[in-house]
Image (cartoon, rainbow, N blue to C red; front, side, top):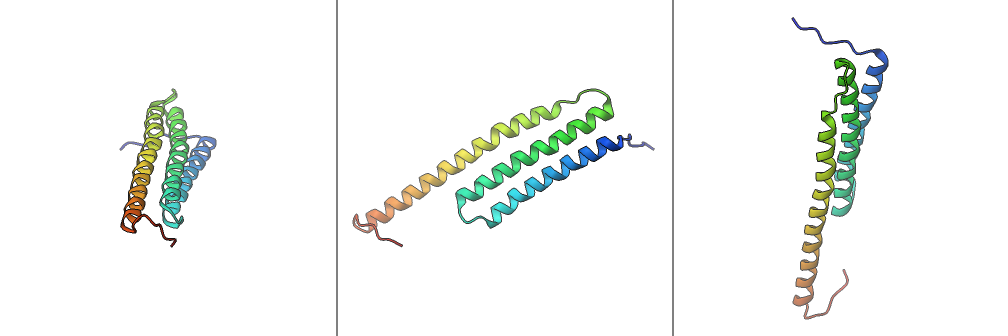
Length: 120
């Protein structure tokens, strides 16, 4: 039977706080997806929540495994790099698609109204 290595109390507290804080930030971003009124606000909240939450969770993971293995563990830096690069790119692509959709809907309303926009 394999026994899990012991983590010093001070490290366990810090790791626990980082992981719980990261999970809380991610949850706030997910709640923003439900609660915020418009598409652009929703996508912004989830992007910030995912990026900030991921950073805290990965810091906790790096600390935990660096202490357990008694050497720096930096694999998580690659994960952070990839998520940090891909999340904003995804946000930009989604926002541009939504802007294109909004503009084409507006153009079709203008052309169907004979050039006169009405206020709603």
